[in-house]
Amino acid sequence: MAITAVPIQPVKTLSGNQYASRRIIEEATQTFKVGTPVALAADGGVIAFAAGTFSGLIGSVVGVSYEAASNLASTGLGAPQPNQPVTGLGASLTFGSVPNEASAKNIPHGAPLNDGRVGLILAAFADTVFSATLGTTGNPTNWNDNLIGTLATLALDTGGNFWYVNTATGNLVRIVGRDLRDPTGTGNRVLFQFIGTAVQQL
Image (cartoon, rainbow, N blue to C red):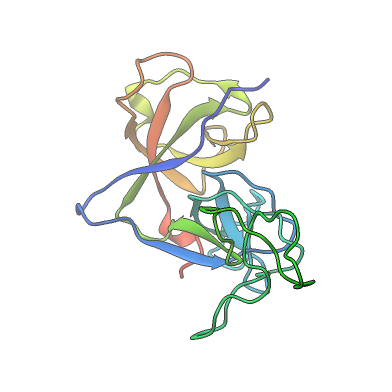
């Protein structure tokens, strides 16, 4: 059963500082959505979390994406080297042809550039509190105050392909409260923080 999860999002920091974020090269053929927990592949490219590694090593969560993946043909396609311009076409949208310039492309005014990277809010930064839908093994779960302090994991909702806090097991996140933007009832969002030893430090 699907629980109609919504994207995970950062909601506050305990210190009042800005969220810790990074933009890292994207692994090839990734199609994850905004608000997806992400990890690093062995070659350093950002991939969707596989929900199986909680050791703080390669494959463990490094953060939550604030951009959708671009389904690149190769890892970091178009990503610039330090102090170098973007290589390749570097744009997500082209049209038509350019007279007398066989290799040139027309890019619509305002088209977003794709530099081969994807943005994420770091999970390892203990200051950040995230919000996600609450559920138990694919079923909606009602909020109760006893959930505060509960250890849980993150699971992919088959209905909308967004991730939710799964209270069935616990080794990745700690529930720290209810998201007060939702009324109490089925499908509540909860506030959580990542457990530092479970995520990969960047």
